[in-house]
Image 1 (cartoon, rainbow, N blue to C red):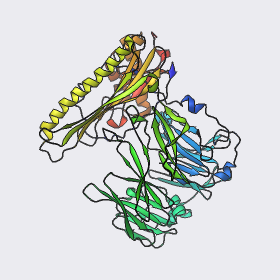
Image 2 (image 1 turned 45 degrees about the vertical axis):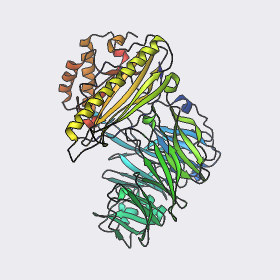
Image 3 (image 1 turned 60 degrees about the horizontal axis):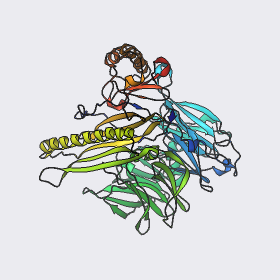
Image 4 (image 1 turned 135 degrees about the vertical axis):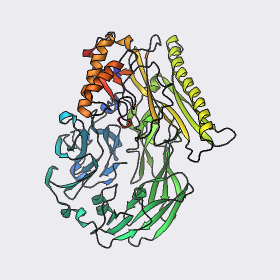
Length: 612
């Protein structure tokens, strides 16, 4: 079996009332293989000489090359001649002088990383996982020597880190109800823990506190002033905390981008337009810089230009992401870059590491031929991007066929107002064999069922919502995630769906399709395993009990959950396969809260009687 790396877009769902209208339509007899969070072979075998984190000889002294860093881990961290950024479960390094891309850290399944920083040849990062006693969630701080590749556990953390920053021999870690600082030894290891009055935090003006986002030590050191907030608005003080002044109109500090000598703020005008003002950090005088109706998001200021994005990737019919630069003196707006999406690539897009301006180049994520790259464009020429190798991710869709999409906007009866947007993707296998035709019929049948359902849903909305003042546009999306399993006999397709018809969130659903490539037949559980239903009930019920004992994720106690699962398991149960075993899973709300997503357990092949 050949495992295929995939990239999935993570959707944030918040707890609220469930949307159950799809319940009757969504369950169909589909099986599948799990995507493997595994490095693509082109990335794993990339050249390693002169690259941080490989243990190979350097053509520069990396400890001198990375004395300071600028940027943010939400985009890229610039450290000397290198850029560091995240994509999927890995941290990458880009040598700006050679355009060489290399993975410097890959996180294992079950490990979560929120932040990292580079300082004096060391990569500092956090890891959170359910590996403690009784499955308790544990968080730790780690260091990787980018010259030797050696990794070291530095300290346990009380919570998951949301920010890491190092400078002047001090390492800062921020998280929920957590703000720690340590002195750094010459070898990069931790020294003593520092009290707040030994750091910049001891200089915060009375009645103020750190902003909800960003690292205060970074801001003070790089910008020369202290941005904080009180209980009502933004406050700007000197680097030593003196001369604090309120900015009463700035109550939402998440819409502010800070930089040396000044900062930029976005304001909504109440009619769908956004205005961007530039403030002088000393006088707090403000100047209107530009206005936009496309929901801009500020991302970077460099060398007299402010950069922002407008993104519609969250909408049913995607128009991708556009990046613009604004002359901070004249307000002139010009296009800087773009990330164009196409059917089959929407789940490849990643907000981390997608845009950064450094010296004379723009580095921007690019989706092309079902692959994800970092593209490089000369800052002043606007020429077509040069795609840097290796690809961050390459889907196998292009090996087997392509993805097509159907888009619909359904209006209310007798009105031009759109009631529902529909976006449905279909995997199309190339070829004329009977097996290919059978697989395509199955995929087309799923598409047709969803389109028919959308017509029914739109009719319901027409009746129920025409005269309501709290109308929300309804959407139904269905995206081909990837070819996540492929060998000479089997191919597996995963599709993720999401329906929204009002409320705090919609309802996700998921399909797995496993086809016999020789016959085109869709495989079922009893095509693969020779166990009896009673044996499966015992094995799967026990596995979910063990998961509940470790993570306490379910509605029921572990003992009750085991009985619930055992009574439910059959040859019609939802499952997919991986090289490690057969995975059984449940949809949100079936056995756990919405926030738990799709709970699942992997049953090793050694515990099953496999037919294939």
